[in-house]
Image (tube, helix red, strand yellow):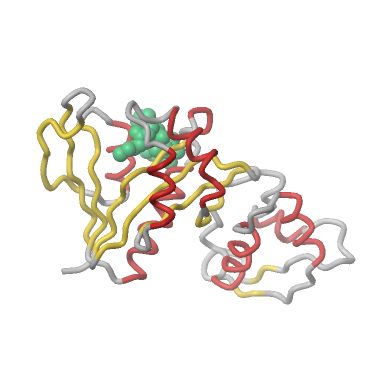
Length: 221
Ligand SMILES: CC(C)(COP(=O)(O)OP(=O)(O)OC[C@H]1O[C@@H](n2cnc3c(N)ncnc32)[C@H](O)[C@@H]1OP(=O)(O)O)[C@@H](O)C(=O)NCCC(=O)NCCS
């Protein structure tokens, strides 16, 4: 996750460089060191300016001060994935769901024009993902998962922040989803983002006849 206090211009630069297929955190570090980019204003926070390190500096000192030296303490960075991520998506999905999506299903998501597959990269590795559809004036979240050893570190939160932020910016009326009635962890995550229960689908999940709870986060009437 790019820290929220970074100004939009810096955020866009970070997203651009980290979304490249061959991105590694060492690339990020070199980028900080090699680009003597001028100062940029911050939207929020106590510090009013951020200086991206120049070539003469041995380390991006202001960035370290601001906690964005991701090579030292990698925070999840949210990127839009391509089909090349399918092996990693399968790895996370198979350990996360009792009825995992097939490779064919993931391939299909990359073909559908209204589907968005987001990935969370931590330390250069894919640690989580989310898939949603943008149909008419709604986002529908179809899947979200985080690899087992990376849970409870805010990765799903970073993915949800990006989805809710994009939904709000796109002017959609709501984000909707279904979640297993017994999946308390995921439900707790969604409620933090203002999702409320709007219905139940009895016996929705075919593997154990479990009910699905329908949750919605509305933006505007
Ligand atoms: C649900 C899931 C995506 C959460 O991912 P995560 O990266 O661990 O979530 P976060 O660290 O961002 O958690 C944010 C908050 O959600 C809630 N939460 C997340 N997992 C929880 C759990 N297992 N039990 C209770 N609360 C949980 C907590 O409030 C948590 O905040 P806290 O850690 O400060 O207490 C992850 O557990 C997962 O992949 N599960 C398997 C797949 C799945 O169930 N997907 C949802 C399908 S609808």
